[in-house]
Amino acid sequence: MDNKNNYDHMLFYFAYKTFINTADDIIKNHGMSRQHHRFLFFIDQMPGITMKDLLDTLEISKQASHASLKKLKEKGLIRYVDSDNDRRVKQLYPTEEGSELVHTLNKAQNELLQQTFEEAGTDWHDIMEHLASKKSGFKNVKSIKPNI
Image (cartoon, rainbow, N blue to C red):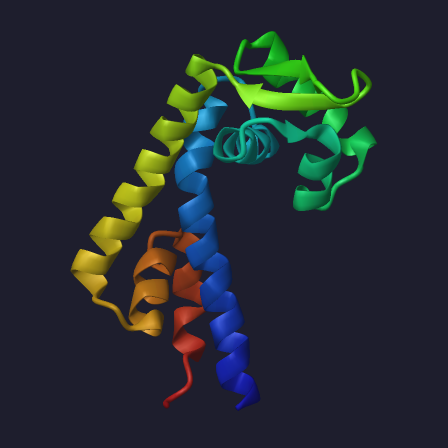
């Protein structure tokens, strides 16, 4: 059973890389990274989220978020609004440009998943192998697949 789990872990790693790199390649063209995408995605999905709640949700420190949030604001992708209840509390909202970028990133990942389901079906291993096979490093791992 251990061998199967090890293979599944590697399979998930390569499948995840395929999924996340789809958006990474797009956001890199905007001079940003995966962390910017992550912040922008959650702000877009939860408009008005407070800085504290965003950091709690993403499980990161305020210090780790500062540069990324600053860049998103400078690029006009998010905006800060003082809370009606407490001016010290900042709520985060996407701008129209920010929401459009999230839509572009989501669309690319959704298309990847749709294509994967059409080509691989609905079996978890088939889906993961289809996604993983898009990464060149997976060819070195595929040979250790256990016989189930």
